[in-house]
Image 1: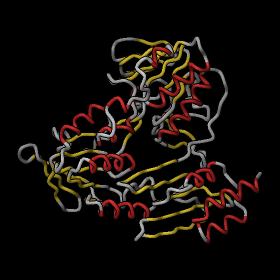
Image 2: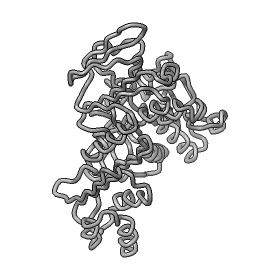
Image 3: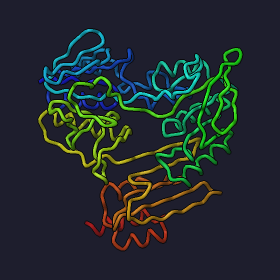
Image 4: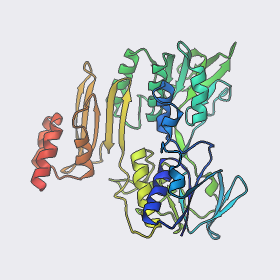
Length: 415
């Protein structure tokens, strides 16, 4: 059996390793389009802070890891897929045949359509090459504007702040991390960040970037303000890498549409990670969910099915954990609330603590927390286990801080 995996990020690597465990004799090819060892993009901020070297970003630290597992690596970009011929055309001119194909091509950063976005000191923060450029320019006191305060943007913010730059963040939404946090929670994070010396503009977007002198730039915002900077980081979101699938017969929406087995509309082609549009844990409807734990679960599921072991995902569950300049925040499941459901919200603005629980019937379906570090995994456990809370629901609506006690009580009752 010949397995070709396009994409050597976390999903691709986990899938390749899982396939080798399931089939000692399979031919496994792992294709990546960067001339770097397989690495984690989520580790790049730690590289920028100096906490790790480039080798610290590598997914597997042993240089001979892939060779020992007989996983052949190719550096090239997939240009198209011929599903009928079961082949993949690569940018190096090679054509790879396959019995099973896994697409784990991840996402690419959005490049906002703004005049001046192509100036030399404007960068994304997505690849090791980007990190090298940013590290060379983001020195102490450097004036930096960052576009975007989503999940990825907030991680980059942390790294830039640790480099002691003069940082200003611009977010189009009405709060920080708007696709991860409720309005009150997102604004509480904003207050924390501002208290740490980072300027934040919400409900604003960059309208133009103009070069001034000696490499400096002026950024004009939609709120009428202009900001001088030496470096601009674009962290305005990502989109799945699916353009090469045009004409392949693989059905796509915002990402590759897959079933619970991570199988696409073409039976021999599977997908995992950020590139997928898989059923949501609660809704059952296709959705993007670009988080690394989800990518790893999808990769293992896809690998099992590719190797002939029927396996199904329960659905894609939102799991977000963020450290923003020392403030820990989390959100799980339907943190924004469920239609026809109930919720409770606890806000301690002075103490930078926040807790929101969202219910559907007798089940906790979503949660958001800020400043809670003890036992917060119990929230995920209640949600993912679809635990019937019974009398504990009323208790939690009165006092949401008792979620750990509820977790233990409901689990004991279920047992």
